[in-house]
Length: 201
Image (cartoon, rainbow, N blue to C red):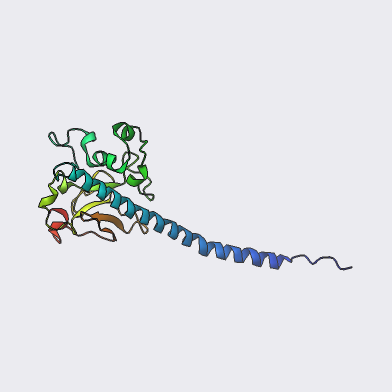
């Protein structure tokens, strides 16, 4: 009676080598797929936030929410855009923001952003649209409304403190949404010199 044949050392090493090669191929692919899914979700978030801003404006004489603190229009953080639109996204109220327990926190946070502003915000709104009347904007399809950012407000790329963040595709691209609702991913954004209406409509 023959004893069962055992694997030789060479066969075992071959199998281990094949597994290592497959892992080396699959792990980066899985990472890219995961990042692609996060980037797509990020675009969806921007679209939801854009809708929230439009709904807010419709209820407030076509005026968009304030982006930066202002003694008259936005004297406190509670008056800034991300808090003002939270009821339209069923996200909560002031207490929810202060305690970081937003019921719809995902809409405000990009999965790729490891350090969101205030722990819950990954996007900034164009500061030049702060409290602006929507009906006076002639080309909403090119106006940058929101983009990946490190704080609540963004500005044209050539500005020193534009707060824009390129966090997708290996930190080479940025997601943004126009006032008309078109969500896009780009490796660069136009400057105010190249396309003035994109930033200062």
